[in-house]
Image 1 (cartoon, one colour):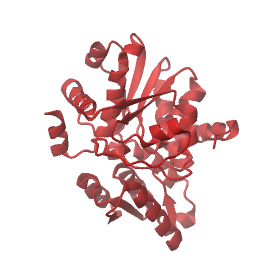
Image 2: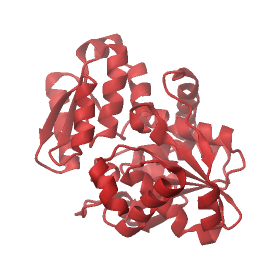
Image 3: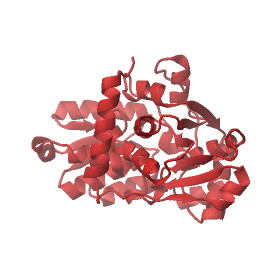
Amino acid sequence: MAIDNQTFAELFGAIQQAHTELRPGVSVTPLTYSPRLSALSGVELYLKCEHLQHTGSFKFRGASNKVRLLTQQQRQQGVITASSGNHGQGVALAGKAAGVSVTVYATTTASALKLDAIRALGAEVVTLDTDPLSVELEAARQAERQGTLFVSPYNDLQIIAGQGTIGMEIHEQLPEVDAVFVAVGGGGMVSGIGTALKHLSPKVEIVGCWPENAPTMERSLAAGEIIEMDELDTLSDGTAGGIEPGSITFPLCQRVIDRTVLVSEDDIRAALKAVARYERWIIEGAAGVALAGALKLAGDYQGKRIAVVLCGRNILLEKFVGAIQ
């Protein structure tokens, strides 16, 4: 399975279109230089503030692009999706703005904060006592049975194109960036960012970051095929879970990720604490994974400019406080 040059170019074209068409509903988030984190790490470290995006996560980008491109019939029928929280919130808000009904399938262990936020945006939530990948597959089955569109959190080129607008913005905000660190779960965000930057600035290194406890895509890339594996609990619930068989993100990750890094739960906690201490922001575990990866590899980028994608802020306050103590 591979991505041919035509498909890769077409995806970049879709990202360019989304970058224009999604405004002003989707915010252009700041790329903020961090003096303290730069001093600590020895690199010029910039934070891409997706935690300041609507719904508190980058996921609103892909969701907005998907809803924008729905047919009239699809709008009338509504959509079904699966999410640990952030994607569900994104689809719920995009659907609410467009008058499209949304049903979100999630695990019973998903963050209560995120599920309550989804409901508050008017979407229906269905929880299943199983793992995230099984929830995705069941949601897709239910959509097919009901004749409704299933919106994958990552296995969808229109979703990926929306996420890719982050890469467009990073290039506009810091054209001379040397490396971009991105947390990876299903691979939609890094696929989009990587596709944009490989077209705009091919020398930029795309660094995929994973928790040691939940590295399914990283292990799949190493194996050369999508694999199943048992994951352990992680603060980075937004990147946890398996990958849908045949996902388009797998060959995209193969093409755009130049380097990988795994970080421990202690590394993630330290990253959350650093952002709280030096930037006064609450970020979620997946955002901490990207910063932890950057700090772990900082020795290889001394004096260079790196961007770290802080992908979201949706974490229970008690969980965040417990992590940084």
